[in-house]
Image (cartoon, rainbow, N blue to C red; front, side, top):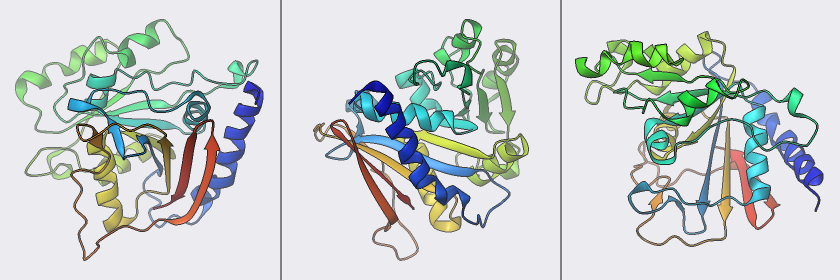
Length: 266
């Protein structure tokens, strides 16, 4: 299969599943959410101690980059930034279409402002004009030694969004997902791609059980085995409300190279 066909296949797959975004949204005050991650065939998204492992092949990675290009924002937790140092931009696209590429707004959930000042999300936009400086969402209870870093981050180009006390978890100080999404909607985010890591994935699923905040789930399954030391996407997730499992709806599958990509309603 030629590279051009790979790009077309990615576009066609998204066209096939994106109807879910166009259905009635019971929560119009928040952006539409696409929750996506790659995992091994034994359900692991990272290696020992959350170390990064290469899971997606070239074909499914082209799909991932296409998904980035059709979303207003792309969200990860600060743990992903620290462990993987991602760029969260669109780098795989059909030759000749670069002028039409729209990079998503990077959004980092970082309750205590732990993001490294030299991470790619902050340094890349200085040399790559198409990349966007990140929005960093922190909690009200970031200790005073961390709060003083806020001007430094903004001087480097980042935007710090500090959530108020009623918008954060009382026990952990983490911003509550629903309030974060409300704020992002006010800032012009109509749809967001959530890429992880495991804590963020679990938080979105947990909240979805209560209020159905996730519109589309996209999971890439790679033909590799990581083993027991790896970290699963939902290792710490406990289902409540009498659920013993969460069944997916309107499931669709497509093969991308050696990977299988599953998309569904959650």
